[in-house]
Picture 1 (cartoon, rainbow, N blue to C red):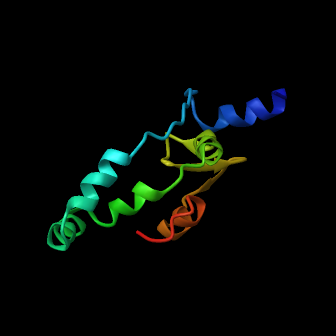
Picture 2: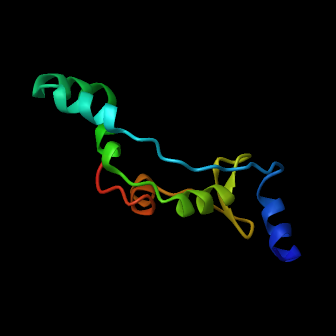
Length: 101
C-alpha cells in the first residue's frame, strides 16, 4: 500500500485491528424460529425488536471490512480524512442493506 494511505489510516485510531469476517450457518436458529407460534414470536419482538430479520441477511464481508477500516474507536464514529461522520440509523440500514428494523 502507499505510504500516504497508511498515514491517513493512522490518523483514524491509535490501534490497528485484524478483522476476520465469517457468517455462521443459522439453520438451527431458523428452525427454532419456525417452530414458535405467533404469540411467542410477538413476545420475542416486544423484547428484542426485529432481530429475526437478521437471520436471512447475507453479510457483505468487503463492506464490513471497509466500514471497520474507517471506524474511529476514540470517538465512536467513522473518520474520513480527518472528518468525523456519525451515520443515522437509516443510513446504517442503507449501508448494511437492511430493509427494516
